[in-house]
Length: 548
Image 1 (cartoon, rainbow, N blue to C red):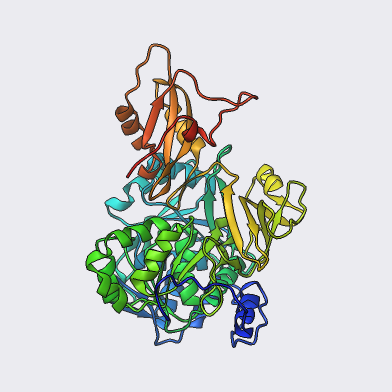
Image 2: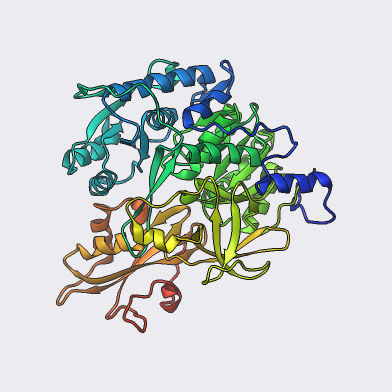
């Protein structure tokens, strides 16, 4: 198949194409040979791989087979249960990316409820999340990478049991351990969680309220992972190059669980490294990688000397999600790898993937995020009426991967769930073939290259500075990230504000990606007719852009 353009246009559809679309849209009884009995729990998901087949490949090429991975997960889950942790206990994990993080997540989610957090968070941020989650335990590395997390655990309002993750997966099975400083006196029951137990909790940031807790059940994870594997036709021969953060739904589902659910393998890296990427393709032999558009752009930027390595990798496809992929970037990726580029659309509340462009020979449409995969999709107006093809409205979903509701947040649930639909906050339309096109975001949340930033959280950090009287944080267009963080402030009476000093102040309490790249000092903040601060469109009104 030629690589130039590689946009598969719709003409007369073959029966094979129509069958592929029916299967992707949720017809799980297709005759394509798939085993449609989804494992009901995460531990059941791990039974897919043959004992001797590779499951986890470390950065230096060491391999854990599926049999060894299951034994590791069972042993470490037993360790956690021996500490008295129950199926509904929250186990926070603050560990850098890599095979050890992957295994710790699997063990925590098979013993109780995993709560992976960004290792870049500072002590105050981590304390907030530990308290908000009601974490019972915290898994960290016993080195400097876990120091902020351990400080946060000591400062948390409720007692959080510190658990040290020791050892390395590169040494083979049996060398990773979880060690608690004060073992519990009452071990929990040996039985693992049930399908309806919450397996994973993540936060999704809002713009007008505190971050919302998204509880994902065992059945949500199992169904989503197998659904993603189905849409990508993953087999035991597939291997993902896992470069996404493992505290993010994208990396956990599309990079880790989906290939494992198909009996395939995962090359677990320490995270995306543009300088190592092409060497990793040669050394770790993946069949695909999934990433956010920013990472894809960095791959392209580094590709001039590595075009042979890109082609020699013989990737079956490249996947993109978590932010809109510009069409020129898609075309450059196709030309670089000589493989289809699959753009998908997902969100945490749907256990990641909701739509995806199908693989050849089915049609992938430019600027579309594809067809629904395993969920029911509609575009609704304000009165919850389903709109016809071509009409713009709010993208709304229902199905087995969609959460039952946010945790302890009736206001958010009332706003998001109407007549059985979950309203995503995104605007778009469906074409006559059922392909979704996104036209804008109804939410004010900032999407910085796939990293979601709550403007309210940054506002609050700004207002903690003694020289700041008022603050509003907003998105500003960025050529590579899509959006960057900016803020406008009003100085307190008699105070002078230095932008560099203010950004240094923010860096003490916020992760680096949340700190505004630009801070404008204004006499008055723009407000709407009701006196509310106006975030959307503020960058344009102020004539503000952020370059590379």
